[in-house]
Each structure stands twice: as C-alpha cells, then as structure tokens.
Image (cartoon, rainbow, N blue to C red; front, side, top):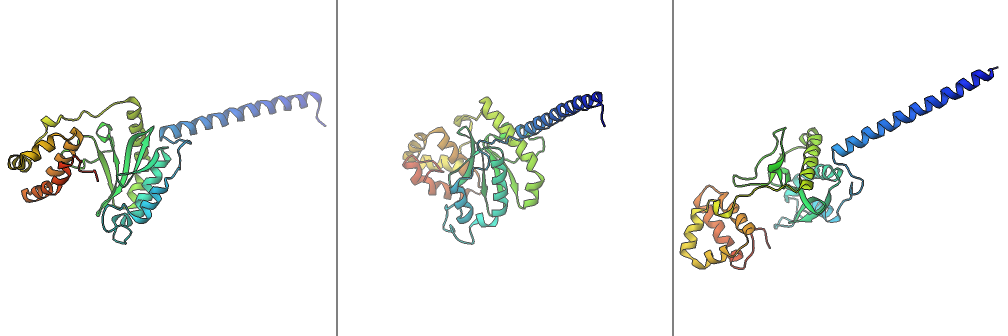
Length: 255
C-alpha cells in the first residue's frame, strides 16, 4: 500500500508530466503552423474547386474546334494538370476560369495559371520576373516577355519532384503581391516595332491610326504576337489576320 507521501509525489509528478506533454503538443502545433505558413496553405480557400475548371479538365478549353474531342490538348495532360491544380489549391489560392484557362489569384490579384500545349503543360507566374528562382526552373514564354515566367512539364514525376519548390515559389509570389511590387515594363516607345508592321502602317495609314488608339497593354500584346515568328512571311500573315480586331479596338486575346 502506498504511503500518503508517495501518493502526493505521484500526483505532483503526474501534473508535471501532463504539463510537459501539453508543452510538447503545443510546440508540435506551432511547427506545423509554421510549415503551413511556409508553403502558403490556407484553410479559407484550401481545396475550393471551381466547377468551371472541372469542365475544363473534362471537355477542354473550348478555344478551337477540337473542344470535347479526344484530340484536345487538355486530354494529353489531364493527370499533370490535375496535380498542378491541387498544388495551387493547397496554397489557398482562389480558382477561376479566365481566358478559357484555370487562373489562381490571391485577394483578387492574379498569381498564376495552368494550361496545356501540344508538347507540354505549364504552370505560369504572372510576376515571375520578380521571383528569385533559386532552383533555375523558370523560363520566358518568348524573347519579349517582361513579366510572365513558367515551368514546363511533360510527366507527373517532375511535378511531384518539384512540388515543394513550386509551393515555395507560390508563397514568394503571394508575398510579392502583398508588398505591391510591380514589374517595371518597358514603355511602348522603347519596344522594337516589327518591320512588317511598320510597312503595313505605310501601306495603310488607317491601320496605324487604329493601332495607336489601342491601349498600351493591347499594343504590347500585338507586338509580342507579331515578333514571335522568325520568318517574315509568318509575321505578315499574323498581322493581316489581326487587322479586323485592331480596327474595332480589340486586343489579341479579346474575342
């Protein structure tokens, strides 16, 4: 039989152990919270899927005649896109469908998007030029791209291998958005005007007038589109194809 002193000892020791256990649990909770913050997890928006993106993954983007057919490029990369989607949602971003693509935002500010091409799928960062890119995985969509950077994927394994890196990049992108930092874009006057477009301006003064009436953003979009091909013939074809849109004041991405 235990003595009174022994009973008191075990009661005191039990309380001490209980306090130690509580402190340990609290420490673990704080560590988990720190990890969630590091990789931008948020209970508020976490795993809130947008039904429109479900349709996108099932039927395609709808931007061409291959919509809802096996040949739609979204079908080629559905598994990869689904995984990239999950990574975006894990970071507490809001999911929307813009420009027929899944776009992810933080407090109504665009952070990134995922999309499919014929040869790959990508995760894009709208202000990727401001990211440190310590892992050297970001690419420019084109020579004239000033802000956007993306990462290409051709298999699920690469996405899994880079998951923590991508989440760290997304956390950094959110931090940049919170700070209000902006990419310093070159003025339109500083950009190279394609020779083919300059020739069209001389040939058709009304085209020049309509182009100059466009917003700087729309002009920039056309410059990028026209400068992408290396062959003059392809550049001219693009200019001619876009002329109807320019005359009605629409940008390259406008419908």
